[in-house]
Length: 83
Image (cartoon, rainbow, N blue to C red; front, top):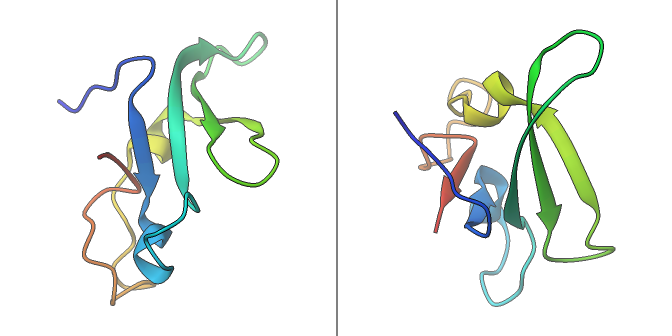
């Protein structure tokens, strides 16, 4: 099972589509949270570029694999991976 720890630097698969000399599509993993009403497990992470916004995404989506039918040129297996 893949696990991330707070402070881990992770990349979104779309990082393969941009120049690697910047921080675009790089994020800091903050941790996990639970949606207060649905009880759905969520992941909290912060962008390392742009406005450095704080984001939340459903755990299953965050940990999911790249849709290689939609993105056949992407080599990365998972949507987010630790670098």
